[in-house]
Image: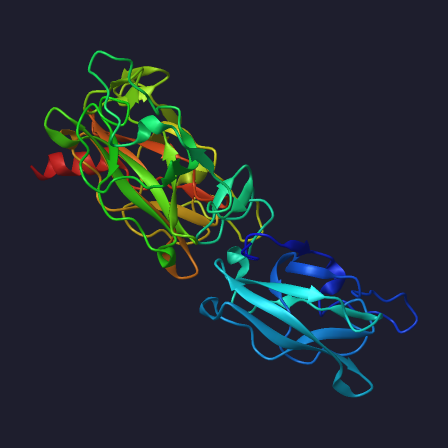
Length: 423
C-alpha cells in the first residue's frame, strides 16, 4: 500500500518539543513502535531536523532526524534518527523511512528505538500555517488543498469514495426512447467508475439514448493531472441537437494509480425528465428558483460586519439549496475580494466574476474565500439566476470547510435608483 493512504496516528501531546520531563519522572518509550506513522499533535507536525535537548518530548533521550525531509517527488527515503545523550546529539542512532505526502505532511516508518527512555519527537512544521493544518474534523477548520469534507472529516477523496460499476453506464449501452431510463438525480458524494475496467467520463459529446438514459452526461473539458488537485468542470447532457442542453458542475481529482474520482451532486432533472432552461429540481418538481427560495437575512453576512480572530466564526458548510440575500434590503454577493475576518467569519466567500442578466438563465460561477493573502485560497462553485425585480438567487452546496461563509455586499435597490436618476 501507499503509506500516505495507510498509516497510524501519533497524537500524544507529550511528543512536542515543548513538553519537558524531569529526570526523576517516568519517561516515555517507543521501543515497540513498528510500522508507518503520521504525527498529528494538535495540528500537522513532523520530526525535528535539529538536535533536541535531553529531557524533552516526554522522554530522556528524544529522537530527531539527522537530515532533511524528502519532497513528494523523492518517494520513500531512509534517514538517520538520532537521540541526544551525554553532550552527544547522536549518542543513539537508528534508521527511519520517510515519505512526503500530498497535503504537505510526512509519514514515517519506525522499527522501534534502540532502547527505552527514548521516544520520537514532533515539532510544528514551519511551512504550515494556522488554517492550513489538518484537523481530525472539518466542523471548524477548512480542509487542505486536495481534500474534501466527507462525513465531518477532511479526507482525500482518492482514499474514500463510492464505486459506480453498473454495466449500463457504458457509452456502448443503448436505451430505447420508450424504455425506463436511468436517473442520477440523487447521486451525491465522491465516486469512481469501475465498469469492467478502470474507466472515466467521456470528454466528448455522447449521443442521446446511450449510457442507459435519455440525456447522457459527459465532461466538457479535460481531466486534471495529479498535480492539479481537485478541479471543477462543466458536465453536459445532450438533447435536441445541443451537446450542452443540460449543464451542471462536477469536481474531479486525479489519483495515484491512474484513475479519477468525481464529486456529483445530482443531475439537473427530475423523475427521469430534465427541467426546462431556467428551472431547477426543487423538492421533486421542476421549479423556477426565482419563485421558490430560502432567505438569508442575518446582519452578520454584511461586508461591514467584522469578526475578531478569537470569536466563534460562522460556517455555511451545511447550506444547501436556493437562497436570496435580504440583509436589511435586497443585496447580492460581492464581485470583488472580501478581506479576512469579515461577514461574521474567517474566510468570507465572494463571487469571482459578474452576476448574470435575466436573459442568461441559470449560470455557474466560481466563489472564492480569501486567506493568507490569496483572494481565491478556497474555491467552490455556485449557480446564480437573475430574477424579475432586480435581485438574484444563488444555489449553494456548502462551503469547502468551516470558518467560511457567504457574504452579502452590494445593495441592489440603491444601484437601481441611481441608474434611474442618471437616466
